[in-house]
View 1 (tube, rainbow, N blue to C red):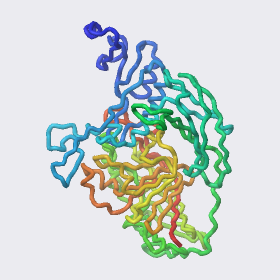
View 2 (cartoon, rainbow, N blue to C red; view 1 turned 90 degrees about the vertical axis):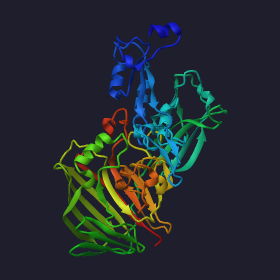
View 3 (cartoon, rainbow, N blue to C red; view 1 turned 180 degrees about the horizontal axis):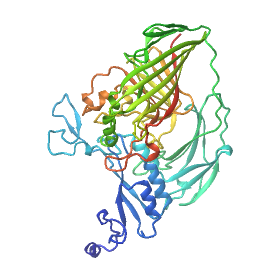
View 4 (tube, rainbow, N blue to C red; view 1 turned 120 degrees about the horizontal axis):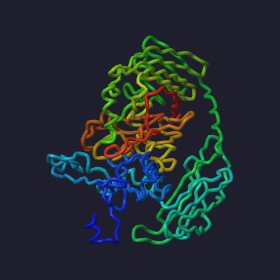
Length: 549
């Protein structure tokens, strides 16, 4: 260290290998992948007198990089925290076109070379071609230099804080927009703000709402560049924040269909005939075998819904949890239907109660009790009660999966998007009404894995080109929804996306809880609030059939 100082005494020195505290001769204390709890502990340790720097604190391999917003909140809270670095900016895959019919962006071993680090070059905030990964908007939001907080939503008061060190906020014009179920209904410009670095100011946004029953309202405040910069053009958005507004009213009850329901309870199945739909329930499998609307069955064979607890693991971030998914047999649970009871509640309502037991490995067992309440409008209300034998086991999700007809290829939803997002990687994604095809919901990670999750979903539609489809709706709590062209089983063991099989249909996952992504490839697992334990759980959702009739 003395040699370095002799060469250039003007620059601060850093070397993570020295550690922290009295034994560190460098000017900075430094660690990598320190937990959130220990970062805050270091910030409050009077024995640590040097700036504390995380030379790496989040790992962006494939589907990962969770909780960067929490780390950055700590960087802002404690001046003694110098900040941190993501590992790293860009995936470093290399195009391999040796076989012109098998183009890949190769990771380790992709050219047949050995030894190699396999996946460890695909770990960027952007893809190898610099197109954006879902990590990008999350990191951009965490790093924005303007904080926007709700101070008093009832009186429309918000606090704007300038986190720049040298720039007054009068350099950035602000604006707001109000949405109703994801559709912009009003906008406005903010009065010019002159806020010095490190200062904050309260503003009032003059929006008005005439709330509609069942609608969700969000206010978005943002700031843009007022002039071209070498790195972006005038109008580029540099900061934003979205707020849910409390003006929502309960959704109205739908008027009853004039037709009724006919229930037929046979030895092997339950059949329900509605005015324009037909449902068949398989007593042996404990789920639906047909859900027909306008004469079209929206389900594939054994289409579900069935409880789904694992995911095609995020490499390498999920491998700590995947070990137990394998050991406990989550991927090959054998389901037995214990009991099926059906009854005609009224001329327009039928109820099916089902009890199932799922057996995995090492004495792991799941008990799933579900009640399907079907009305003549084609609405299926689903109430789930789930219990497990090992409450310490961490799951990928608690939810259900449906295997749908491939014609249900159009997807739209009111939730966080447009890119995939997860419990610990969602602060950079606004709630909106987003449209996509199911094929494009597959995030193009070169190694296929579970992806495409959307948090805080109020409803989601899957529709055919002819307009037949289903709407998934929340009941009490918000849902997580993913619609992909492949199942976890199809994606797990495929090394390159080009080798995925031809899609058999749409795979719909409806989750009550979903495991965060974390940074375990090099860093920490998902933080405690984003873990999903196999504890007793109740959750509900609705399936609404719709078509042209």
